Image (tube, rainbow, N blue to C red; front, side, top):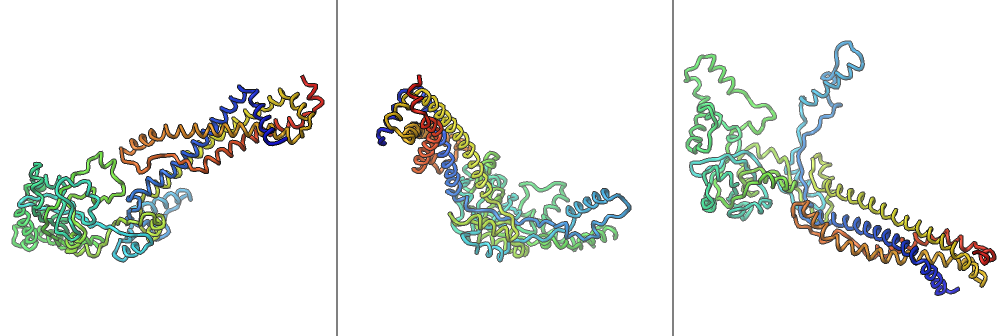
Length: 528
């Protein structure tokens, strides 16, 4: 029996059982469509995650932070956690645990590993690291004429402010003697009309930062004299006068109308030295500079904070006054503590496509904390993999159920075609040829069903692609996606789906085909 005749017999047998064959074919079609759809969705979602994360520049940066070293309980002096008294072992253990917890909470702290220039150079030497951004910050006060306003000051790369500029521009160079102010700071300086805001661009302000502002001696003295902190009416002349008074007061204690006991108490207070870990307050040095207003940035609202990029430097979100890097270093360089304190955080940029996990691991190996998108990226990939695995499992179940239907159909067909099988054997058909006829019937159902199933899956993808992308954009607050599809349907998937479906249906046909091949031709010819 030739292959053509084998196929003709197989198709003829299916054709004579149109309804049963059609229902079986529908089952294979649905199962194959479900399998192809779930595979294409799983592949597409993984590719989608890769594109959406790695396709954005912000993915290739991470924050480095100086964490407070954790004290090891084994390093606690035994005498500090020794339990005294006669008591049960259980109670002694509880008391000892309480002593350990109190020591860990209130005991001396190890010095953190500050980001010094040497440490930053070591991070910059890590493969694929292309840039490191640092920020100097401190409390400050801005003066515009006789008016002043407090302003938390940050100096560093200001690229992250570009979308917030509402007037003017960002500084043109890293060493420009220019400053960017928040709209609220200008409001406190008396610049409140929209026209006045535009007119303020190009004006000059004085900025004070450092120990004098941090210790706030004039502020404290003003509060002692007036019973309140100065508001925006606090003038430059008043600040200078209060500063002079604060400096002259210790020298004038002997001339004040005080009792000897009061003088001794005040001198003892003024003679107190700062403790070792208060390096920033050892000096009242005040750093000042005069700058041109280059631009104004809008405030970050509560809703914008919820949507804000979590990897944006916190200094840019919270500061009121912004200086370019070199200009800021020149200002903060006037402060003795700034030269020795290093940095508490840095922003590290890795070459797009580089080894971001390796750079993060290297920095963590230096004893620093890191904050990057890797956790979200790996978590998203894991969730997508689990979802795809679940969908594939259900699709496989559907396809195997269709296989059971094929087995049922062909078993029934063998019973109904027993006489026909007997005739074939009587005219010379071998057991292998009879087996081949029924296996071919299973393969034909698998081939047709997989073809229809792939066409159905492809159509469903086209219909659902736009809807799902739109739904994702709504979930990320309208941010434009880099991907135009969430499905991936490579050529090998067509071949694999067809091959798998044909394999399942052919395997499902093996039992009835084997049963047909074992039919006794003599009994088959007498079968009614």
